[in-house]
Image (cartoon, rainbow, N blue to C red; front, side, top):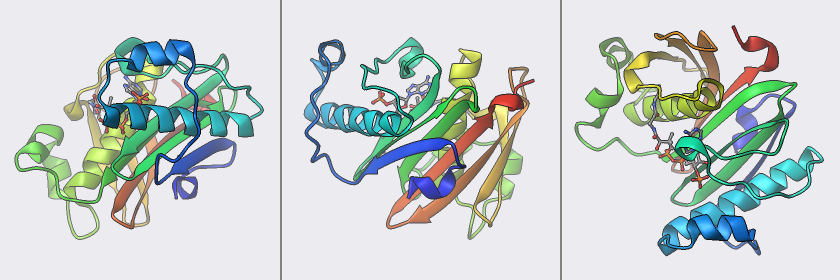
Length: 208
Ligand SMILES: CC(C)(COP(=O)(O)OP(=O)(O)OC[C@H]1O[C@@H](n2cnc3c(N)ncnc32)[C@H](O)[C@@H]1OP(=O)(O)O)[C@@H](O)C(=O)NCCC(=O)NCCS
C-alpha cells in the first residue's frame, strides 16, 4: 500500500502482522528492554521493515536506534521514516543524494477523539474538511510532515506551524509558517481497508 504513495528511488517495506523472525541488535534490545509487549512488537516489526527496505537499496543490516526526540538513526547517507498503528507497520528509506528527507504515517481510518481536531489544526484547515478531507487525514498528513521536518530542522514543529491543503486526487501540500530548511512539503495520501496512509518526500534539491 505505502508503495503507491512513493516516488521512484524510495524503498519501502510494510507488514500487517508481527510474524517476523527478527532478532534485534543488542543495542536495540537495550532501548526496548523495559517496554510493554505491544511497544516491543511495533518496534521490532518496524526494524524488520526498515532492514528489508534498506536491503533494497543495497545497505547492509545495522541497528536503528532512537535518537534525538525519538527520531530513528539511519545508516550514513540514508533518509528514512517508520510508522506503526494497529494492524500495520512500515518503513521507507532513500539515499540522501536523492531525497533529503522522507516522512510516513499510518492511522486507523476513524474520526479523531473529540477535541483533538481543534488542537491540531488551523481554522482555514478545518474549513476545508469535507467528504474527502476528514480530521484523521489532516492529522496523519501533519505527522508525516513532522517526521520529514525533524531530521532536517532538528527541532519541534507545532501543529499550527504548517498549513496543509488536502486534495481529492490523493495529494497534499503544506506551507511552513515558520522559518526552516524547507518552505513547504508535498505529500500523497490514501485510505483503504480501515487504514489511512500519508507520505511526504523532500527531493535532495528541494531544500532552501
Ligand atoms: C513523533 C510522532 C510524529 C510519531 O507519530 P505517531 O503517529 O505517534 O506514531 P507512528 O507509529 O506513526 O510513528 C512512530 C515512529 O516515528 C518515528 N519518530 C519518532 N520521533 C520522531 C522524530 N522526532 N522525527 C522523525 N521520526 C520520529 C520513530 O521511528 C517512531 O517509531 P519507533 O519509535 O518504533 O522507531 C508523534 O508522536 C508526535 O510527537 N507528533 C507531534 C509533532 C507533530 O506531529 N507536529 C505536527 C507538525 S505540522
